Each structure stands twice: as structure tokens, then as C-alpha cells.
Image (cartoon, rainbow, N blue to C red; front, side, top):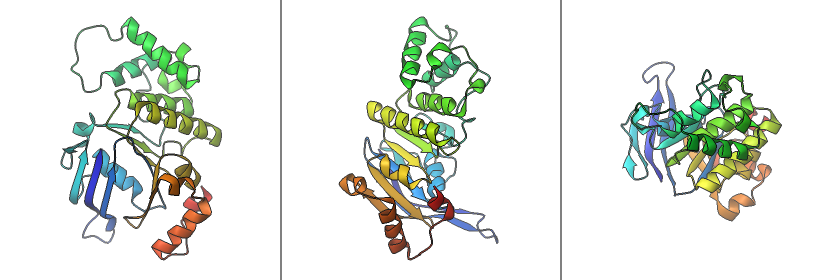
Length: 264
């Protein structure tokens, strides 16, 4: 479903601020894979996700989604293939519009606009059923402005919107980093449920090693623009944080782990 072949990305090339963010990264995700991506600051995980989304164009290499080469497509032309939830709860929704209107926009993503009614009665009932499953009381607030919702409620709504059309690839970009632990846990559980029910191929970037181990069927760890660790199946299920740190130190040749990685 996702095939990354030897992608390279350098920022500020030829200047004193030159930074080689990706160094020949290759990764293949099969249909239905839920891959968590972990690494310290500057490891390249967010750059890889942004390269897949089309936010950054790569210097070399290829990216294919569902068998379609999207390497040279701009971000907006990759939108039909991708659903994305950002770290900032303020992104991913139209805050001045109603919950109902946001869902209707997400449902019509990529479609031609007409002069029919914005939301039909059947659609309204369907959205209420979807929101009820979130267990956040949003099904009774369809006409509320999204900007009035809490961070957790907005992330849950964004997650629902991103998966509404069952994209070929769902990108979760540290989508619980700005939430308190209790809310973050609820959004992660919701992510698991939506990914499982809709059988979505998913890539989740996180700083939290426990979350990376607990969620998904595959885990990769990046360091200095490369993928150093790639575990899945039973090996991933049995993995612990100390084992992951030990493995990281062994393959990176470094005894120091990033502070943010440890504190998470």
C-alpha cells in the first residue's frame, strides 16, 4: 500500500545550515499495516511523513501509494490517497464551521461541488451514529462550532474526518502530543478502533516509546535520517522500553538517547 524507495532529503543544501534529514530511506507497508515510527529530535521521522504527504518534495528516490507513483505530485494531488491528523488540534478542521458542516466537507472531499443541499437527512443521521461511537457527547452538538471543542474532542473529530472516505493511507503525526495523558489515551484507543474497523494502512509518528510498542503491528525507529530498527509481529508484542533502548544503543553505536525520547 505504501512503498518508499531510497528517498533522500537535504534542507538548506550548500549553506552552513545544511541538514541531511533523510539518507536513502526505504520502507514498504502492506495493506492494513499499522506502523508506529519513533526516534529522537532530528531523526527524520516527521520529514519522512511529510515527504509521503507531499509537504516536502524529495531530492531523490520514489514514493508509491496503492501502486500509484506520487513522487512528483504536489500535496493537494495526493489528498485523494491520504488522510492525515496533525499534532496541533487546531489543524485539520474548519473552526468557524459546525461539526455537521465539517463532516459534510470531509465526506465530499475530492468530489465536484453542485447546488444541492449541503447535508441530507440521511447523512445527518449517519454522522450522529458515527459521533455517538466516539462517546464524547458530540452527537448532540452537531450545530456547535468546532472551534469551541476541547483539544481531545477536536482530535477525535479530525480522526473521524480523516478516515471518513477510507483513504489508502492514514498519517498520524504525533496526534496526541498536545493532549493530557488521559485524553491522549482515549484518542489512541479510538485510533486503534477506527484503523481496525476500516482496515486502514496507517503510519503513526510518536515520541512515546510505550505508545509505539503498545499500538500497531509494526515498529520502526529512526536515527540520523535512517531506519535502524524494524520489528513486527510477536517480536514487537514482547518488546519492552528497556529492550528497545538497548537495541537502539546497539544499532546506533550511541549510549545516549534523546532527552525527549526518554522523558516520554
